[in-house]
Image 1 (cartoon, helix red, strand yellow):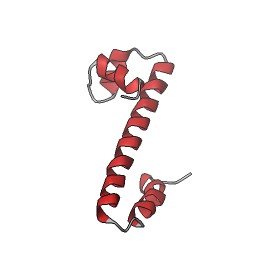
Image 2 (tube, rainbow, N blue to C red):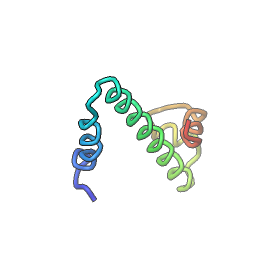
Image 3 (spheres, rainbow, N blue to C red):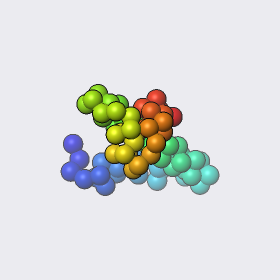
Image 4 (tube, rainbow, N blue to C red):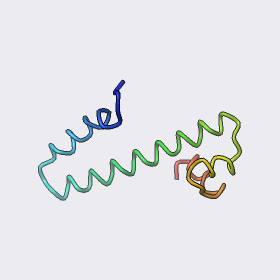
Length: 77
């Protein structure tokens, strides 16, 4: 396991830097952000829900979003 977030991200950075075509690289950077954000927010929401938290509490933990938005995160949206 990587000791830091920076170290954990290094393989992804290497992958992205090896894309020679700029517009393709840009598209892959955006896709990586989308995939990581969606997956990690969903995972966190579901973990919190599994710990017995209500969607309102999860929303508060996740930056003060509404319970509806927290539920959407749980669905991967």
